[in-house]
Image (tube, rainbow, N blue to C red):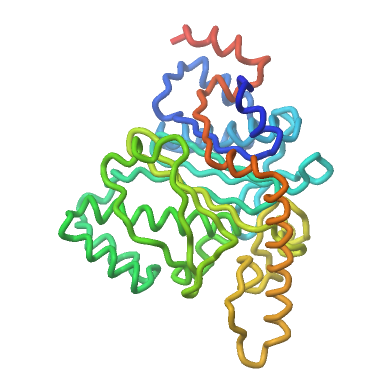
Length: 354
């Protein structure tokens, strides 16, 4: 990757990277070269996908994770070991002992794009979606929305239904926007759909057909609510990617140990959450302003842990205001950009081997 103005992002470990792998031409020789950059098990998993698009997205995701880890933590791409939390399967690398021991990242892909977001301390989750995707064309928008009604709050449902006069395209865009926010959050906390996402409430808004150009390079910030209360320690940001993709990233507080758990349920910074010892409130780094009857000590302890983590995060942000600027920037990369320098000449040579 050409460093240039990306140097501060790499130094801080705050990355917002997009790879439009679905549209790049790749010759058979280049494809073989890319597969050879992966461990055999990962390469075989990529090849098992039936559709070319799915193979491309899977390969792009693995290569982007390896590239980001190599750039930020100084590891050789071939030495990067991508692990998965259990049971929710969130990817992570062990950053312990590096210059950024709390560094963590998240990836998402849909259609043409693979995206990655990373943070040096706070939990991060990301989701990208094509707002024009209609793989379910046999359904009307009301029929499609009905399948997800149990995951929506009454306010969200009423907002989506209320967009009917603007047409089904508006309802789909608004729904995908809501779903991207919820996905980004639950991926950040590493709980997946085991988390009751109806607790989350998102604003219902039709971004319109021209949202990619309107959002510009810095995107738009959004807030999130849970159980009727604003989650002030979580920040969400949308970016628009051509031709019609909406990309949402959620950044939260630094998880207090031992809630930040690894695949084996052990405490450790920079990995996913959701181990068997986590309780619902602490596991999602959020405690409502009220306590359950008869459980005041536990609620107070959970609240104190979250407050401590939030205060630490605010201190870091206050001393590094430039980090917020980095969170408003994203970089679109080519396949060649994410390859090790030692491989780029071979990649160029293989371009003519159709």
